[in-house]
Amino acid sequence: MTAVVETAFDTRAFRQALGQFPTGVCIVTAKVEGEPLGMTVSSFNSLSLAPPLILFSIDRKAASLPLWMKAEAYAVNVLAENQKDLSNRFARSLANKWEATSYSDGFMGVPLLPGVIAVFECAAYARHDGGDHMLFIAEVKRFRDHGDRQPLVFGKGRYAALQPTEFAAPLWPLDIHY
Ligand SMILES: Cc1cc2nc3c(=O)[nH]c(=O)nc-3n(C[C@H](O)[C@H](O)[C@H](O)COP(=O)(O)O)c2cc1C
Image (cartoon, rainbow, N blue to C red; front, side, top):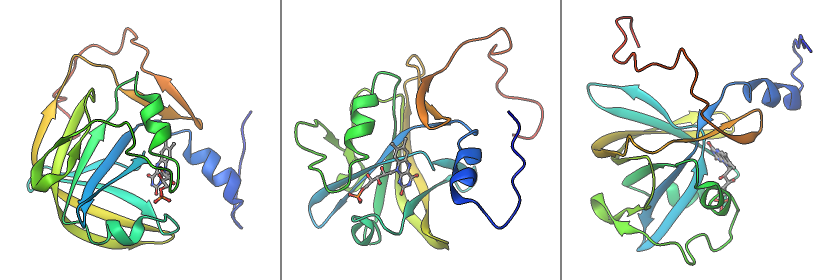
């Protein structure tokens, strides 16, 4: 089915169309006032290589946003395909997300989750208005990459796994920009 949608925006259709763009799933963590903070996000993206910057956005309606605004450091924990339950736990508002969740302390005491496929430990760099979200830009201070694990994917409003195909040969680094 092909849907052509023009303004005035149908927000539901807009969300659905945006959901055609698949992403990985991350839990962004921080420690604020001695308490661990964590939130499932799909808005993580790379931004800059030099300086090494990444970004993510948080809904202005998120109960924990005032705490995120105070955070001076974050970790972006990129989830593996077997971490759907963890993703769901950290996507629930105000639930005790950290009960029975093991973690270690990273850069500036930020919680690091085990079993992830990559982690980026960051210092806060900038925050910008992003409409009904706040855009967080962070500078990567150190990172770890567990390349042998497979990522959890989110697209079309549901979780998925990467399906290797014949055009998925390791082409990196590409000789084109990006
Ligand atoms: C796959 C997935 C991706 C999500 N991505 C984001 C995101 O990028 N930004 C955001 O604000 N919320 C996102 N959410 C929703 C938040 O995880 C959820 O609203 C949050 O944990 C609520 O926390 P609170 O206690 O601060 O309200 C996502 C949820 C799921 C399941």
